[in-house]
Image 1 (tube, rainbow over the protein chains, first blue to last red):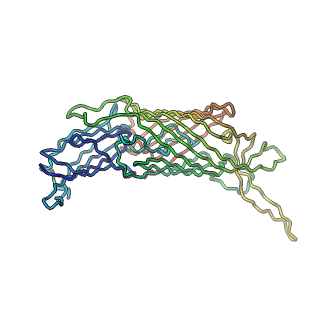
Image 2 (cartoon, one colour):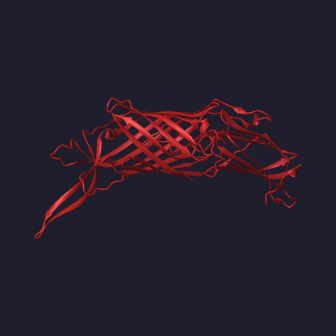
Length: 110
Length: 305
């Protein structure tokens, strides 16, 4: 098990949204524009499970970006590794994402 | 849930020539899911109807104390010059609005599985409360028939409270934003009066000549002026046809007052245009409303930031 710093950013305009990381509901800060973000620490065994629902007007585009960095022995963090996905809200419903993110298979965000 | 209220100064730009709307589309989703750190958003808009213009700023703040604030300044595009009267003038004034929305939609992402879509018909709905204060100054005359009477100066201080309900309905072919509000407040009937710019010239005799001194133009309403307790009811139904990919919304609306004094109903139609992928943030719109046998067109443009 490793401690990871997880920075999640969601871009888009929604009427309702809910984000769950490893079964924990995440509170998101709002930048006043179209960006919602959170930084959390997770004890990741193998994969980080991301579950998300976004509701809004159809054809609204959105992006989810997750930056993960492992905590080193001295308490500092490695370089960020990035996972990202994009989409648009479909007609007749909302968008949803279920993703198991393996931090060992991510590429550097640099 | 820590708090479940968010701010909506008004909406974005979905408004008619009167500056009214029944749609309060907050840019803060699932307010209970936002952290208390908060954030700010704003919209600047111009609403031009005939020769009039309104400049508005809508501000939203999220966080533990969510608040929506809207401000508006109004006036006429034309200034007094050679003629005595300009039609369709708007009184210089200011408006401050405060609004809150409460989401009634419950979603739980922990139930999302690897497969499947999130289908919904009534995808979101929320309650709205708005309080506004209006201040304006203008002149009134009972008639424009000669001899032209001296206009009487008026200062109007209006307050209004509204509650409303909004829905986002979806089908496989279109989205519908539905909204209705009912309010009560102190109003006047200037919307129903003919408005004009009155130029008050003063003639002065000097030893060598006669000078005409322009005293500036004044917004004047012609007819019987009334102030009363009104009960405005507004409704909007904005449809976004799927074939237009969220870039065009058609707004069927009605603005009305059901109080005994100045009772009216004013239906209208609007068309709003948005950028691709940004249906909730229109860049502008055109509305046409009908009231008392007359039509009024309005162009709304603005910027969200």
